[in-house]
Image (cartoon, rainbow, N blue to C red; front, side, top):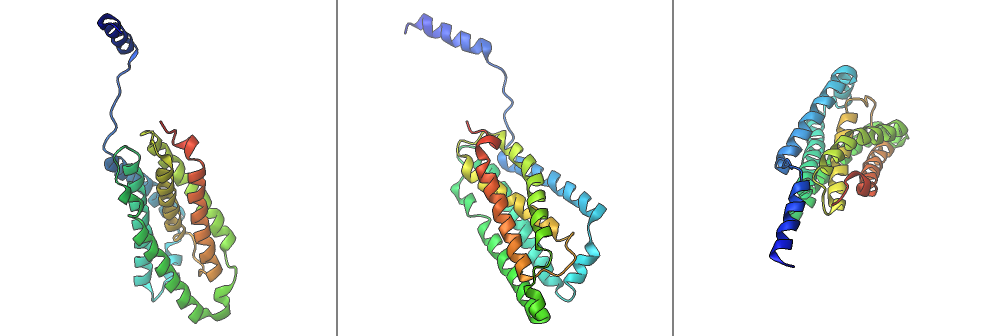
Length: 218
């Protein structure tokens, strides 16, 4: 190709080019998204949450309540920030493992709470309880949180959407489970707890399955 042809090609491409506004750094976008979601969640709890029921359910076990909810929140924070970090080229793969210790702590603390309920309630702690309502709540809230979250992640057009979707789904599910604490005044049975985590896995799975449409890879 001659120099003249090359220059003509460059000029033709430049004539049709549109200015591009660069995205803010991924962690900044992640923190901003979390702040907006947090404000929306706080408003929802203020309007319809049962904070007295939450405190009554954990009466005498306030430290366990705080640690369990902190583990849920930390899981959500690390998962969402990791999703934003991996949505752009060069994101460190270590973000995939970042939320796992907090998630393991969440599982362990929830298990401790269930063990205490079994010791306190006996057979009643093995009942079905409100599992169906919890399942619907976590899935619905996870989708409501996940939709704007995946939309924000899609702006980076991640080349590898699967890890982004998995972390985004985990973040949305953890936020939904945290929100559930303020709307689930009844004691959680062992079956309820199993349903909670099945719902979390389902939200993560739905995010992974929808990645090609929601994240629009380059």
